[in-house]
Amino acid sequence: MSKVFQRWALLPAATVPVLLVAGCDVGGDSTQAMKAAVTPTGPYTASASPTGTATATTTATTAGHPRGAVESYFNALKAGNVDQIVGAFARNAVVEIDGEATAEGTKAIRSLYQQQLHGATDLLSATHTIVDVRTVSGENAVVRSGSKQGQARFRELFLLGKEGGKWKISEFMNNQSS
Image (tube, rainbow, N blue to C red):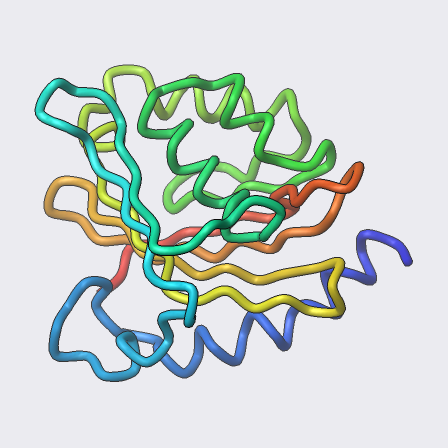
C-alpha cells in the first residue's frame, strides 16, 4: 500500500474526531468532549522540572504503541534535541506547524526544528497532553494532543505508520486553538 493511499485512508479517522472537538480549549475543565476523548491508557503530560530538565509521566506502558512515538517526540522537543526530534519522524514525513512553511522530508524537518528551537523558551517549557489515540488497521494510527506554550494553546494532529517495525510520525500538523 502506497504512503499516499495510507494518508488518504487515515483522513476520515483523523478528521472526524477533530471535527467533534473543534473549538475545544485543550486543558480546560469545562469541555466534556475533551475529557471524554482521553484514551483508556491514561493521559500523558510532559513538562519541565524546576532544574530545566524535561520530565514526563504517563499512566501506562507505551513501548511499541503509537502513543510512545508521540511521547518520544515531546520528550525530544522539551530536551531541545533536534536529532531525536527528527528520529521520531518517518523519512518522507510532512510537518505543518502553525505559521511556518510546510517541511517535507528529513532535511527540511531538521531545518525547521533548528529554527524553531533557536531561543524558543516557550517551546522548551511547554506542556503537552495526549488527548486521543486511534489505531487504524494495526499499521497506521492517529494521535491528537494539545500543548500550552506560554499563554498560547495549540492543537496537534499526528498521523503515524510503522517503518522498520517501529511507529514513526508520517505527518504532523498543529494550529493555535481559539
